[in-house]
Length: 158
Length: 77
Image 1 (cartoon, chains in turn purple, cyan):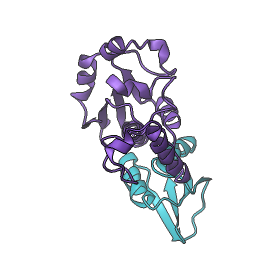
Image 2: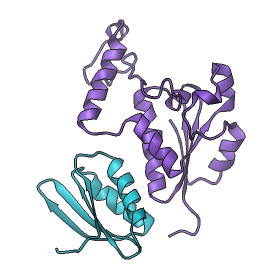
Image 3: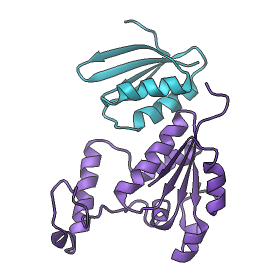
């Protein structure tokens, strides 16, 4: 094994259900593979670690031509279509026994993944540190993330 | 192949990344030299467990495959 731990640094900038999975799956798996992992949550990505939204992230049917049931944008824009797309996705994921977002976050915290909220976007969006689930690290800025990422072997923007 | 295991971990029905996460946790509870028997049905776990073993240095000392079920014997290093 390498003397120095491999390291992965991820930016999570989206707050939809489909975009919440990759950062959490990769970070938790990385730690299980004896790597160090950190996720920097910025803009809508903050919703992934917010108590009030983490369990209710949505799948957007608008501008998403890859929907399993192809849906013209004008239909996707109708009231209720986002809820329907989200329900379908959750039902498939349930059948495939995929971990839920809250389960993955719990696992991330337990295994020592650094979950960094972005201070600047918290201020912009009026989000307080108390709005986050317990176990989230203290908010940081770009420099802290870059300092960690500068020594990383893998960096991803989601 | 007959390998004696010290702990059995049932990951049947679970999808990526849960088998890997649970394996890591279970290995943490064993002593060096003990063997974990992990049973999965996720076809991706074949490659994933190899990658995990390579990376963490806990060797897979035996595998079984029957009817869509994959069994891994992993020795804690």
